[in-house]
Amino acid sequence: MDPYAVLAVAAAGWDRLAGRLAEPTRERLAALLAVVRGHHGDIRGDHHGDTRARDDAAAEAAGLLREALPGEFGPGAESRLAGAPPGTPPAYQGFHAEDLAVLVLDGHRMVGPVLGPVRERLLAAPALDADALLRRGGDPQAPGLIRLPGPGGRARLPRFQFSEDTLPWLVVLEVNALLDAAHDPWGAADWWLSPNAWLGGAPAALLGTGRDPHLVDIARFLMEEE
Image 1: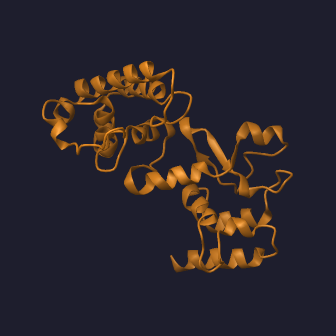
Image 2 (image 1 turned 180 degrees about the vertical axis):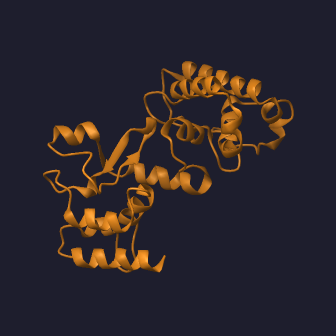
């Protein structure tokens, strides 16, 4: 079986499989996935020059899973995989090898056919990392900010939260509290960055336009409805 397909199968069944791996095996798997992902932060990218090292690490990671869980990844497992179109990464039930890296290395569950595209869209939005924000005089640990775990678990702070001088918009902090961004940063970021029929556009686009009370009212109404 293609080693990337093995990793995709593991991602799809991670809830069931993770507890069956010994700690040393999980640590080795994490180290190998970091190599597979590379410094680009995405297994699925076209990374010229490091393909051999990535493929070798993927093969070792797949072998590690086969050895630890022969009933899951031994003979016959390949029949569970739907054929992927030529030139595309192997997938299983909408999961890819990158999803396993997210689960193991990044420490969150925005993976699979539904949540994976949401993760990619939100992480693609303009953002600052903690170091960049500090260099600009901001505070990445300020209470109330959305912090999305990016590749390797490194925090990415969506750029819309800050005015030009890196001070957080007060209305952002107020709305983030209403949306419980501390416990659901992905949901809060999605609210800010997605089109909103009540507002006629993405809420983030309305910052600085004098509609702060409206943003708060809509967020409060949303949470009351839930």
